[in-house]
Image (cartoon, rainbow, N blue to C red; front, side, top):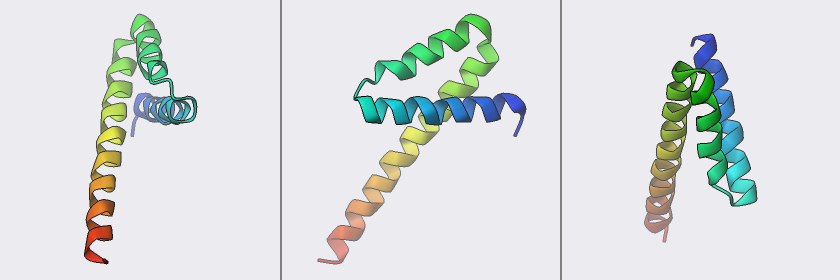
Length: 72
């Protein structure tokens, strides 16, 4: 991965973790806005990683729910 991707992934993880802890999803958007004001490239990479991590979480939740149903 590039340096930009490394930074974007790290920021996405931190923002999503903070949102989960605090219950305030706005932090994810606020970070995106801050990044966009200085670096559109970093913003785009950050937003992509946010979408990927959210999609991964939904997919894992679905797979876990299916696993629970097959063990009953």
